[in-house]
Amino acid sequence: MTNTRQSPFKERNRFIRWVCGLLQTLFLVILTAYFLLVLMEILFEGSVSSYLNLIHLLVAVIVVGIAAVLTASRKGQGSQAKTLTLKYLVMIVFAGVGGAVIVWYKIREIGWLAYVVSVVSGALIVFLSIVIWQEDKEEEHDGESSQDN
Image (cartoon, rainbow, N blue to C red; front, top):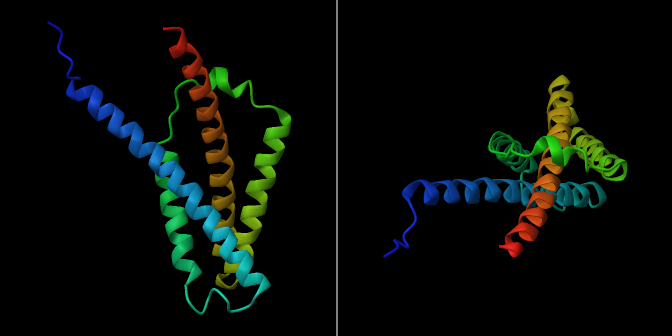
């Protein structure tokens, strides 16, 4: 008789992977929401800031981004990094620079710290974009190999 119950280590490993994926997805959702709200605030002065303090949302973006970077999967980076084309890399860098500029524009009143926060934000955008892109490729590759079994 075979035991159909999985070991606690496999269940815990699956849960940890799920939490890591959730953090990365949550970062993308919060970051996108932040960028859209900042854009609305820039276009329509006071439309967002009268209801929501965007600095608090920026802090949430940074905290979740740091957590997502620290929990990012690092397996398979050597072979997957070679498939990153120049086109995708340029798009990712432009997204990071654009995000950094938007963050700097919104918090430029705080002085030199605005430069630090915007550079960190841009770097997080670039790094997480590359990590998520690589994981998408790994999932496609894993899906192909699991169908063969």
